[in-house]
Length: 393
Ligand SMILES: Cc1ncc(COP(=O)(O)O)c(C=O)c1O
Figure (tube, rainbow, N blue to C red):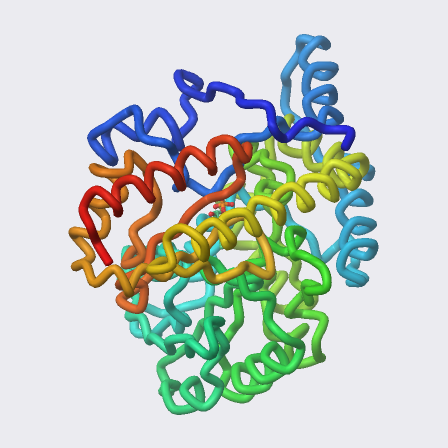
């Protein structure tokens, strides 16, 4: 290994949401933070060095994206996901959650509804709701300990006023890398019903072999012509604070409309370090990412084995991508309030409450394992001690 993912780096007092919002969110600044979806590892040195070198120049005036920035994304998508895109399909956006809000504003009337497949990343519900759009839920099906899409359920759930479907590809919190068939089915149904697909592919670079991420827009012409894909180097290279997301829109009319919307408020103007960091990541981050994924997979395996041996009441849903583990705690037979209290007050851990992701998350907690193994060992020991002390069987 060239990079040291075991190094424990104190993130407190750096304005890291994960550490410095523990007190307001959980009432205790000393919990082990395993919630916000960023990692506790140093980003690839190539990114840090690019930022330092640029900062040394000392003039931070108005900035435009370079050709090298676009090329780095285009090459990365072809190399990593076998997806050939055109430069004109790309547009900077200041965050994927914001991007979802922009699509709602740009493409939907107030009366139109948004389809989501819970349990799912909570802003998929919260953002449309805050924009006064009704949500139509098509819950995922739990099948042999993994989620799959309810394709028949989707056909039944659709009404004439459904206009956007937000797809989490790969899935958070379940970690699924969707099959080509699942994506083709979504593409077919949505195209035929005039439902625009937002494919949020922020976790796409973190698929674990043999799983392979499939960009939604690449599965068929119907998918390509009826989708807006959002991607970012933020999860992949641990640079969420830099904010350097982008949209990919193959369809000319959709693209023109979205571009006009963004341009009218200059929402597609990136900042100096966003372009620079994304380019450095995509040009030079490959080796770091490969080692990071190996490390993450070892952490996932550790959690799984530890639970099986020591806390069999909790089952880990093994993610096919990314660093979030969906923990099935139903066998503890606790109310959601008591489950959260067990983690927070007894085990000293800050995880995400499963119901954040929808009612289907009842009995679950989401654990972020993007941290040195020593933190995970400590967290699991805490959890075991808490459960043993309370004599929960
Ligand atoms: C599925 C998904 N989409 C989007 C985001 C956040 O993206 P952004 O910071 O670009 O808004 C996250 C972060 O956890 C996520 O899991």
